[in-house]
Image 1 (cartoon, helix red, strand yellow):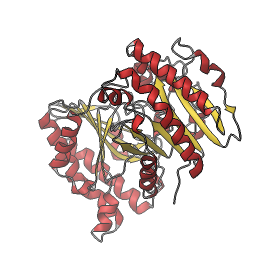
Image 2: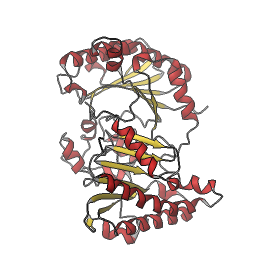
Image 3: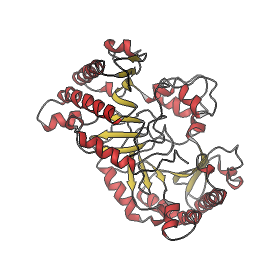
Image 4: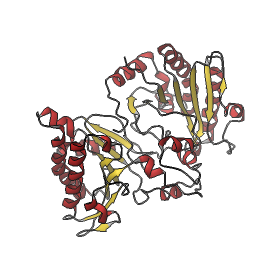
Length: 214
Length: 214
């Protein structure tokens, strides 16, 4: 089986999940922690080398305070959980805003935990325009140089993006690393994550051809 | 019904279509001309304001010469056909390569034909890295400024991308204009285009919510 080197995770549907259970929308975020850890462990077993989670974006911070507080807290919890694993951990996002959680500042340079066998990137207060706006004056048309000119330069090209919650869009997720990614959508909401979702996505990915645009 | 302002078209599957008919792969490209014109006319009737066609990319030019010759010819034919319509036409791509068709050089500044009621962009020898590499030294984090710093600055944000041929990926299609696009995949190959494909995509799009990442 052909296994992706790098998987991007868009864990959408937390608010819709909460609404469906008759709970306040913001209660959904906390329920995304268990799935995040479970998915990490499955990917590690399978031998996925790199994982990138879409935590929250600068766009998301326009939501009501009760929601921003809840998803910021969930991201801090998720990162702290991953510190107990064999992970090489990077938190990436715009730290110049007060909405970037202070607790995560020490992770904005990559840190190794345990055997550090899986690279994990966590996008926190990330913005596609912010990411691209670092581009310096002398950019050649070389693809590698272009990635090096991004704030997200330490995040590699993504082979497979899996999005939960049924929407078929990238919502600003790493536009440069995603140019050739295969895109798989799960209709279930992220808090309802189960191992079968990942296996289903990997089986589908195995049947795609890799052309890298060629 | 909520109609997208700008639709991106990824007309994939020409080679697989030809193979399925027992024809040489390169024979598929010419069969993409009729669908292109038919789709344009349907979109005009419906009131779509802007259409962007993915002609060919710098990545694609690595293919055998018999294929590059065929798809370059098909792009010239498609653009010449659109000159007979009410179209405001722009051809965008890297003109510094000999693979950019000479016949299309006069379209690299937008030209109006007839009532010019529909904006049509045609990507020819386009490359995502080429597009992004124009970025000048002083880029602010303002989203509009960022689009203005691209070679594709005259192409607006895309609401809906429709891809024929079953693949679920962008293949380098306008990474910045696609950040919030809804993405609809048709399994049929592009030469088998029929009006129902477009209607199906529009019906699906109508049911999506627009959040622009928020």
